[in-house]
Length: 370
Ligand SMILES: C=CCOC(=O)Nc1nc2cc3[nH]c(NC)nc3cc2c(=O)[nH]1
Ligand SMILES: [Zn+2]
Image (cartoon, rainbow, N blue to C red):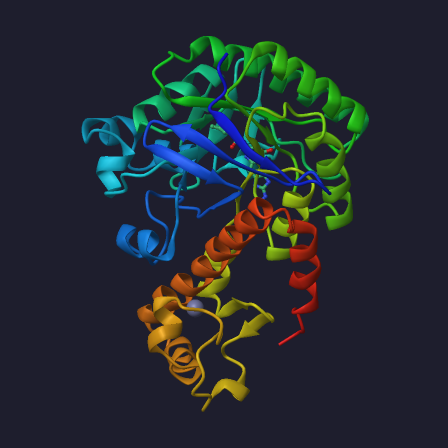
């Protein structure tokens, strides 16, 4: 098992590290934030916008694309990259983790996940092998094993049963994966029980994957608990492989998880909040519909050089939002993604210069509530 990960530098005073992940569609510099493109689009922005704001890799969702337009149609177009005109790396996760996470929508058996389509309620089924085959058809650069995401809270018995099943599914996923340069990551479950998670790490490493993801977090548990589990388990994850914390998070979450050794992140927050008029800035969050922005000629963030901040005032963005104009989502999304992607670039530089702990202090010092 040769790792796709190269470590460039390790912080001297914390677990943060600077590296890169080699994929079929290019090498990703880490730590990295991955914008979420659920249905073969990062909502409201074009691939050109994404490249201009610095996105290296985006997420697609297996479940959503399987349901619509279907993985066979996308395969017939040469895969997701061709279909959506994105020629850089793509990671596909389930996207329907809430569908698969033991909810009434889904029936989990040893064989796989039986669930109802959220579109027309039709009965569908995905085995771990099916999930690998779908992601291979999509041409995903980084595929995720089908797993069962344990909800929070869960009893120890529930966590044991679900984690053991996820482990058996991981073995089946690995066996089903034809080595074609596409990477396959294993997902660590175990609920909020560190001993179960430690056992899960051991079992997944025994099977052998191209990277390891912390699953079952950012599912409603307190942020402190998420960070506790992240800190304890990241340290047990192989140092020479990529570490991916699924579904995380706020800018503060990203800084804290990098500090604890995480390399890869995805979250709908920058894109979803943009559409809801909530903007991230270097000094905190800004709610654009607030009346105080009505005649404010300043850009969202004076320190930001994104397309939106270079050309538009807060007053104009507020007007677009109040008028429910389509351009509102586009401009807000460009800014929020630029903020997230820019934060990761500043983090990478801080680690390269071995001053990440100091960066972390300064990051908090600047965050006054807007
Ligand atoms: C093809 C199938 C690939 O399976 C998966 O992607 N599984 C999976 N996705 C997750 C996504 C999450 N988002 C959050 N918070 C927003 N927490 C998450 C946790 C998981 C998880 O435990 N598992
Ligand atoms: Zn901006």
